[in-house]
Length: 374
Image (cartoon, rainbow, N blue to C red; front, side, top):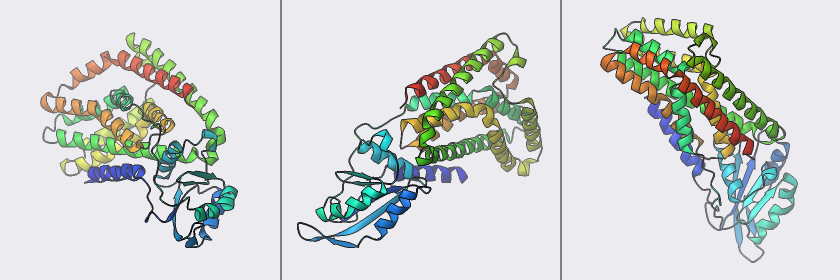
């Protein structure tokens, strides 16, 4: 029941972020104000709007009612909606901050500009008959790239070693291996989806006023980190090809691997009655700890989606985590049918150099992409 609820909430979030804003009545004057919690000017703009009359007489006769929509970019889908408006109105990057008020033919930036011009625009009828313009250039990150990144994370040795360890211990419990394996995989999918959304929302918040001055520095930090991970994975490629596995750099710390192995053993030996829910919780714990290794690719993907300005971030992360669990599902069903754990482990070991080289190529591509991003 948990997985359908998560997916349903994600679908609702996607539609909420993409649904156009419309007035209750075309003759109403629609005020669309974007604010941020930590912005003093936003508080002043919102306070001014609260002082407006509910009805205004128009310069050309007749009257109009006020329809207010105050959207906090730090909450819910506010940042995604603001990004949509910034793109649709072709707002320069330097002006993409709050408070900002949009109307049919333009926008007002800053609390003083809003206070000086809003009532005049209302009386002129400029806020009536609002229809949200379509973005001239809709940013669309490559879902093939995101899917490929997720697939690469799924065959990461950190992920593969844990699932193989679990399957090898479950192999003797033929009645439970499929259910237990699916419980573990579902847990990882949900955990990584939640982690991705949490990091994305946090970075969206930081990408507003409080973080704008450090945006350029953060960009180059991300480029440097991606380049360094590229170099480390190239070195790991040569060490793996020479079978010098003790010199592999990008992997889980030894103590954390031992801790995970002990958790898996205890979960499998917990008894048939509690094993499935315990293995689900095991997936949450291992996913959180394993993020030190597999999370490098995920973080690069999150930054990629954030820089692209895509309003369907939830769809992007669902694409990523779905691709990430595909190798695990394949391993599970192969094991459930034949339980050839040693053969699968040997296959993963032999292909470790290819995996490391693919990781290096991904981080290099990300570094190049971030270098050219505005």
